[in-house]
Length: 294
Image 1 (cartoon, rainbow, N blue to C red):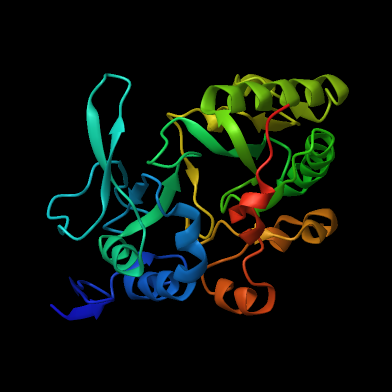
Image 2 (image 1 turned 90 degrees about the horizontal axis):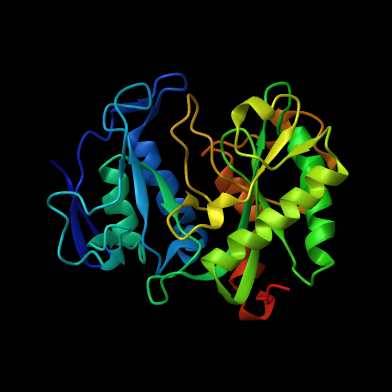
């Protein structure tokens, strides 16, 4: 079993030639290479936050499971933080604060990384607003783009600047930086805005959770702001049939998208894309971007 050293930490690598995505032949070694390539832009978006992983040790067509607690055998150098569960129990969770931790996780086939909209140092204090746009039956990510532009304009009216990324699955995520808010307030605000858009565009938008109401419309999922929920971290790979990535977008790309293929990116696409565009979500990390809820 090969051992590599990352930032002074020794990591035992295993089964690097194991195919995780049979449709494309993408291996675990390629997953590690991808995460190493994007670590500089990915880590700032999840650093200091408790992460949850989607693990697919036998590939994305095999068993998968959501891992919140640190896996057995987690090295003592991996940073963890206690998260208060609804039961009142304190549960440790990993923080991906450095390249060594990211490589250790990827070697465990932690394909997806998910984070809440708060930091471990201030649990329940929302420093981000997130809106998840999910296309219902008969709609695609292109329809999500049209709703995203409406949301961008609506939030800007409240002094809130937004940035977009693909979910890496079917839809879009919109982010904003917040100050002085808690998760409950952020969720309530996102819900009000979603309901406003549903009233204004009932043929295109739905804010209700019932799946039966989503056909032919875009569901604005405001509930991802709950302190108990997580969202796919920017630049995470997704455990889909192909190794798609949750990819930050320029608003010009949102406005000009004509087909879902225009907004589908795999792990092979991201390094050259980053070389051209840099981190399109980097403004989200600036304290100057944080706005209060109205």
